[in-house]
Length: 250
Length: 325
Image (cartoon, rainbow over all chains, first blue to last red; front, side, top):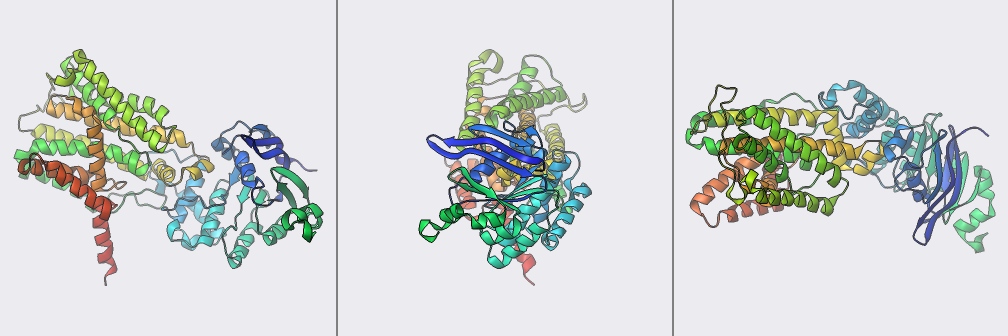
């Protein structure tokens, strides 16, 4: 077993009497292509929100590259290499595609707090952002405002912003959500080309995409890990079929 | 003058049209010598509105209590002049700026942990508390009677404040120029771009590792500093400080000016006070009892039909002209 770049130990989250994460033990290995699946309400987004620091866990630990980050704020987690995308686009809608990515690049490079020089004087930030957009096929859209961009491309900008942070771990929360199947292939192509050293955890409902992309799959049901394994193991697992299709179809 | 937004591809060079306000201001100095007192007041309110635009228009912080920083600056400059015998206008302004900054960072650090209505109510509470302190501390502030006896020495020991308001006008114009330069520089900087990011989507700013809270505290402090300077200027030009500088009405009036001009556009802060204060002056002469009806009508029209303010209307017209062959 290779080293885990991200690990959770006994992670729990409750809202009053409702338990949405129950003792989750999870490992994401360096360079992994890992998917987290489960029916609606399984606690997938809650799990991601705990990993990224949006929600504090009720108990348990989160370890990133050997460091316990459970009590760490969002910004510090990002600085330590944890990037994410959102299930529902969280973009700067009235800014250009370039500025959306440049904001992330500038934060990573530590120039975002500078006041005396114009932003456009930071050619390094702009060049890196343009390069990133080019790799995702968005170079021609750089000057377009997000408001005026087709939805499928907006999903790619979500990924571009996360990549601008040069993360060691990337959490993709339903990257193809709401995208027509034709365009979701474009997203898959982008995902396939992501740098190999980035460990990726994808949360996705599109099983076609999950089984094509992931090398390992974790199935979450009612806040608990039901099963984890290789895609072919998960595809055959009786409990997974039961969860997704119901008892009568198994 | 379109909306001024920074960004990594925005050209920060000053455009020719941006010299227009300064040309108008200098022309007014020569052409309208009998209105220089009103002119100085307008210039001060432009600076005050610029400070508000920085937090409302660019950082998305809503406030109804900006008069706290303006009023504190006004009282600090006034108390130094009337009670401590410090007449140097530069020292008074520096003290007003420092007081604004100090109050800005101490209150900002608390209230910026909240959002929306809670934040709005807290900003209102701060200015209300200060107003009551100023009202009760009569020995220092003159209370409801106001602080008189404000003596301001000549600017740089050379230019005496005259009864026609010439020195005051040019002095305010220079301070405004400095304030505008600073605000413009901020807006075009990476810091300004990140503020726009916070306004547009603070959730995402957190997710890219931005220390959102500290950025907001910093811009709030800068804005309070500029408002403090504007307050200092109003004391120096009026040579009197009344409780109204700390009132909620003053903060509301400022917000109305900014909305009229156009929020988040830098020059909306120029247009708004000019239109508002001139309209106020003219309407108050014609309809002493109902002058606010005219202002109210203007605001209703702008809010209903021109969300970008007067500059937004101009923007729209220019865009239409460009589209036509």
